[in-house]
Image (cartoon, helix red, strand yellow):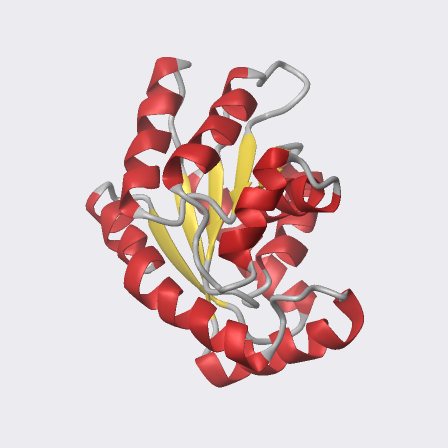
Length: 191
């Protein structure tokens, strides 16, 4: 099985690239953002609680996210060649829990692919997305907070995966196709 973590700051292109990687490698997609947005839209108990964090640019608590991930990991079957984790893990604690979950099902993560994009480009991308997405977290105040939280709580995940020799940085600038070609080559070189 091929289990990939697509990683990077908000606005780096994780969702866009995940969609292309899923098709190429026949992976199951797990996006914490998509799952949480559905819960928020449906005004479920989880959604209301999650929205109270997301609308302020904060991370949803580890326990809530880990439960959703565990269900996905346990549901893997021969229909897929693995999972692509999009937006997870976001903390070192989540990364440690993910590795534990994968070991429990007799698998492991293979690579964390980080899409590197300068902050000024991330801000421009997110503000542009906010004009069409209707997402209430795509405004300058929340974007700034999200990038601050990313630097403090999420970026340390990179060091965790470096220590496991599972880290590959990818330049996230360029056309969607150029970035995707870089990702596919990196995965092909490992797999």
